Image (cartoon, rainbow, N blue to C red; front, side):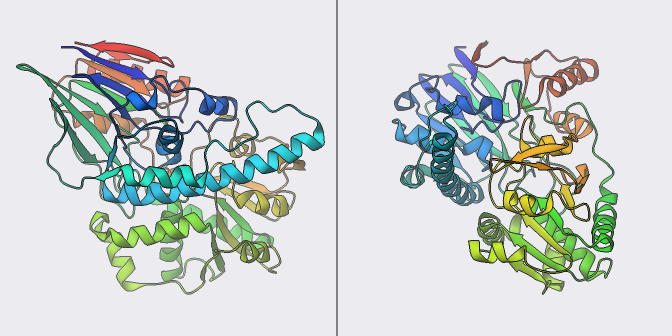
Length: 464
């Protein structure tokens, strides 16, 4: 067998996912994600390890920015192949990429003016990584496949999508390579979701896998009991209301915001929290919410039941900038859900400016915070943080609910591996900070006895 597998992102960190499978004369890229950690953002400007014109196809596991966010740059620099994914992923990816392009343009303009004012040299160019035109040029290349059966993507190359419950449309990927009478299957986990969570069905079993690339975001820890999520959320809402402040929830526009709305709606339906004003202050999350309505077949029974029985009247979808700004003039407690989830951009920064120095307000984190992001600094107890170029004292109460995570914890990661029906030849642990990746690798070795590798950035392996 002549197969090579290269690791060009999400190695020693949790963003920038990108792998390259070379087989049967084809170069297949799995995911093409943006690096989001502050210290790694300069990598987004680097040349691709293989010139985009020489890449035959890209396969997406899901539509989070750290898995699809460099597609417009890839296309602008010469990629003309197909981008394979399912329909939910394609719909969400188009929203995400246009939003990312707009933010890139706005951030580049803002930073250029700030650097000129402060007479500072930037770490990377003060121009957009890509534009809205680049994002739009990506859309015709999407090739949607919703079937459960394999898809032929080249001679001796078959592709399968396996439901994984991370976000709407999220899948693990199996690529089967046939050379003569020999076959090898390579499974890419993407981001593994969780069991018994609201909205989406549980992850599906993997089955056959000769090689496995698995994420390890929470490979060194367990989430809190899922049954406590609603109670903990209700407690935080009540405490914030009693203090007289606002509840700010930095949230990812895809899945997390929809889960929050689900839990808040459930609490309102059961009269467990007061009927406060709730603002979904994220145009992208609002657009993604429409995509959810297109795919109710992916929901679990609980989500379908709540959608049939209840619709909260006090949830306001905030689309315009003017409406977003007006939230900060409302007297009394409001619940504000805004992007981005790691506070790296978006409207949450403006709400933080208004609330971060108010002891009566609460900032509630409901998702993973990558190293050196603003969200991580706040969660780690930094007393002073830089927001929109100015320093602010962190006086607001800071809370974190890990049970909301869309990533499997260390027990669930092993449960996903348990669904593999054979002993893989090798397992590659990626998409985790070093401590988490090492812990997950050790768990696999001790519990499974499988051969495990932790790849380095740009490392390439020969798969026999």
